[in-house]
Length: 121
Image (cartoon, rainbow, N blue to C red; front, side, top):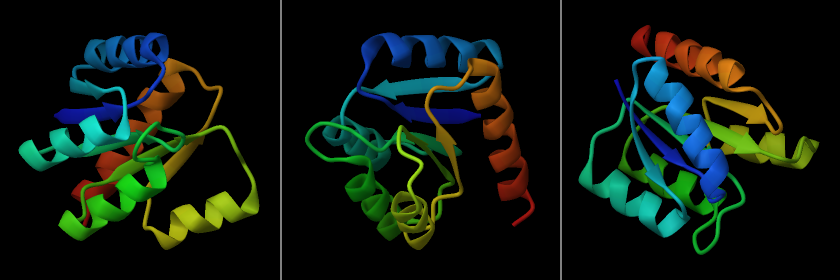
């Protein structure tokens, strides 16, 4: 399964990509929203893991563009757990979100959950 990880912190992106690869996912990494958009436009992904706070094109803006292109599942990564952000994610049709900080094992389990739910559609 092919996954796109859009995360602007290089060390975090590397750690998450390694964990996902070890869980048998093929992972592409984008370090900002603009590169994320280029990956999305040029590839087909079964899941997009998207940090909300990105330079250039933020996660909310990128999620809006993803939804215009189709219904690829999106797992949001966020540092804020405010009701406004949770509602915004729901309005933009995110499939799940994960509050930072989290462990790689928790991310892998959430990825499996979202993909399992997507296969049931």
